[in-house]
Length: 142
Image (tube, rainbow, N blue to C red):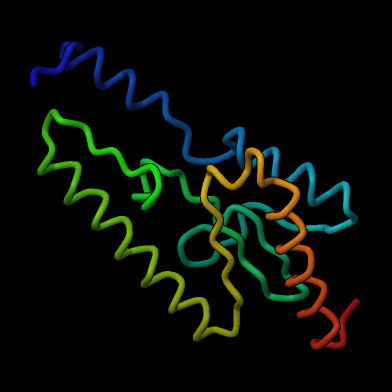
């Protein structure tokens, strides 16, 4: 199948994809803040977590369904399929490496799928809140 956009249009389209402050991320952050959870952004940790709870050492990543190869919604483009498969496989491998590295450094890593921040937002927020508060209680910090 041939791409319906010319190379310049495709480049502009791809460049418009945000890497941070996406709608799912901001929805999640807003709900966490409403529950009294205070977090940091842009903390210089491996993998650049989207949300970081420094006191409890919890790093949260919001993984986009397309870019991170969600098993429920993985839908590879038909155009240049080999390229996209390799790219998404490499992203998934990097995610695993980053998670292992953070865990070795004493961090707890929570990865949430973009689709979990729709109808399942409250459940996802509750899971993160419980995890952060449990780690905070065990660390002895408030």
